[in-house]
Image (cartoon, rainbow, N blue to C red; front, side, top):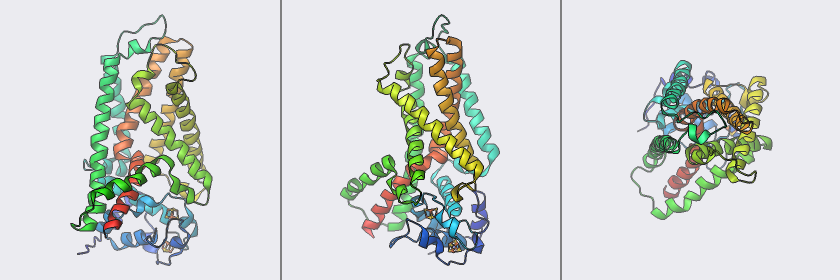
Length: 366
Ligand code: SF4
Ligand code: SF4
């Protein structure tokens, strides 16, 4: 039975811009220009229609909002100023909060204050942990590995790794329930399908190749650079932080050092480019910025800046400046990982390729 929720439009407004939803008269222009609309998808009109009618369950079952890369073509063409691209973006925030069972995502998406307090609190707790657990402060020369002892770093990495894995995997499982199990209504999927279709997750995550179908190719390249930048930071912090903190200097050809330089360049370029675009509002997809968009960009930008400063101070052999900047760096990286990966903007990196995967699974059995 299809359930209609008359309050849905109001609820959606808490997640972004959907004020002009009622103005849509289903002309289909947005779908005609969308590079992802095709035989099996009426993106974005179908989703807009669901939202208009309050078909919340249909939206929950749908993977289509994740197939949109917010190129803005539909918003530029809509004769009624509905901003369909922004409505789909708003629905993605809503879905992120629905996949999250803790309710935390909903809080940070619907309250700017909750978001700022959460980030500040995480930074504060990180500072206290560093204060209590740091090793001896050697002032004769930079000894980062002594300041941040290996067993403490390993423990911190393990805690963050488990925290992120549990939340992200459980949220993905909820997404699977909404988009596959509820759509199939009890029909099974052969195990080999799960394995065969898994290639889509890997290819889409690494290349974001579907984004290249948008008219402006540089947006795909910029997104890819930024994505690789913060994925590198994620891997360096959660897996290789201990190697990064050595007292010695790696040669310039060392992979850890190259990864560090790469993440700095990618993040600095990607975030500054995105921030300038959002200030200038020069393209339809940058006309509206949710507070969480800004928080994500600032956390990434400050991660890049403090990361390279730690490196520079270490190179200049300035021990106290290195330890203080490294501590500030961690106070930024921890909120970035703990807030953005399971609850907010970063999560779309996982949800988008999995949406393609789940869609293939569901459609192969219908
Ligand atoms: S969102 Fe705009 S372009 Fe799309 S169907 Fe509605 S009125 Fe037409
Ligand atoms: S923003 Fe681009 S990809 Fe998304 S629905 Fe509109 S036209 Fe399609």
